[in-house]
Length: 145
Image (cartoon, rainbow, N blue to C red):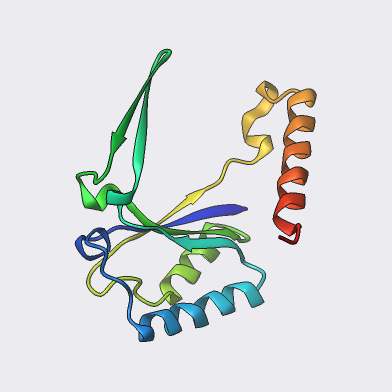
């Protein structure tokens, strides 16, 4: 199963406080463990919401809102995409994670939808398109620059 592991923002991350060398080293060691175990598929930190934008959809209308955004605890400071056997394994990995922020913070784990989750709504044609797109993404990410 694939899971998105979401590091919630804090006041420090939203203020643009950069991690210390020690934090980067600890997180690097943890990420190396994840990669060596075949768990980590992707992972990145995100700039504060002050550098972001939101696009609000309402029927055909689109409204762009510049950051920063309120409710820091509802924002994302970073993420991983992991391949694990089950949610229990994901929880065990998260428990081993160094604290990603200088103070208290939260990490949320959410399952990623898989094709079988969509049932009959995912027609064979749509499943074929999804496979084709995944292959194209893989090809693009492996292409030398």
